[in-house]
Image (tube, rainbow, N blue to C red; front, side, top):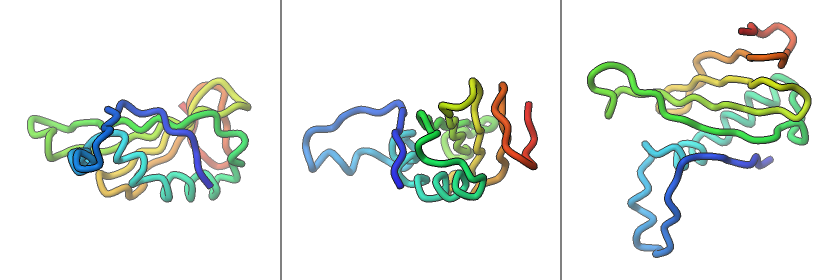
Length: 111
């Protein structure tokens, strides 16, 4: 299952320049973490047709944020006016999942 990705990215037209898109960019992370995000949503029984968009953002930590960072996936749903937040390590391992606004998932924390 695919989801629509809204990420900050540059469009590179030359095939040789594609290697410049490192895994530390949000667009590359969104593609790299797609399977884990889809698995997490499926585990929460959120159908793909309820997913409006997914935005993956990099979150730096401390003084050496270039090498010490994590990913946040902001999942916007059609059925509510909040987000399902998925915090992941830089290798896409899911650390925490919660909801915001009026979005609710059974058994999940809401902020």
